[in-house]
Image 1: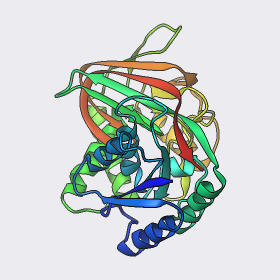
Image 2: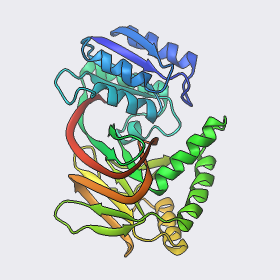
Image 3: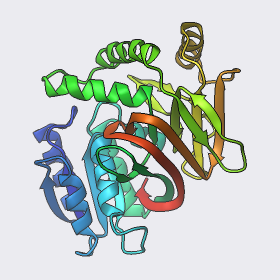
Image 4: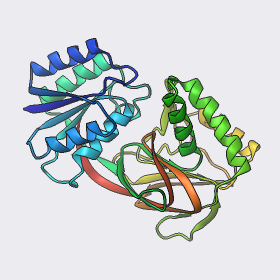
Length: 314
């Protein structure tokens, strides 16, 4: 088996020692090549090149951003039988995709699990989400593995990226502070989104829209945040959208999501599971994020479910 290991040396939990252990372990079972990423998009370029070069396996070692880049590189030419299998060894802070797959979030345990998968041939086909956006500084065409959104969550991602550019660590406390600041800004300048899903009338004046490709939505340290608990890699997309952002509404839902693994409900909440596509439009440009990565702004975006898009070692 030919394998390509794509390592993001800047990821939160990625170390030279851990990379060397992983590379040594893989090299004992496969013919291994290694790429260390040096620029944004490098992981996607390396994964895309692995397709015509006939690799059997591409392993992403980094955070969810690295995994997303590798997935987008593998599928740059579309869903085809030539696309190699994906392996994941977490090296970031949240590692949501790995957690949703039931993979260990510890790099050493994940390496052992990957070696077992290679030896025994265990894998699964997973559905992915696809984003097509327009109306911003540039149009986007992007795959996502676990979540995407427009509005508040994308504003938080934008704020955290701005803080990281100043050298601050992307810690849970930074996300909480940025979320609060973004909420205050949303109250001053609320988004007015229109959400369309199949076989239903448009939903007007929506304040935020979160789209899930699986459960959980994300992790806050070890706490799984479950917006659409019934969403999975084997079904369509989940939608969590709010029509109001008043303090009582937000407090109720945030408390519910932090305190339980349950089934959020309410009059201001629009929630759907197993949706084929979701279209969101806005009269003004709004931020768009996929898998925790800011894409930019848009005035219209369509999220589409693509079943059995990729084979993943499990």
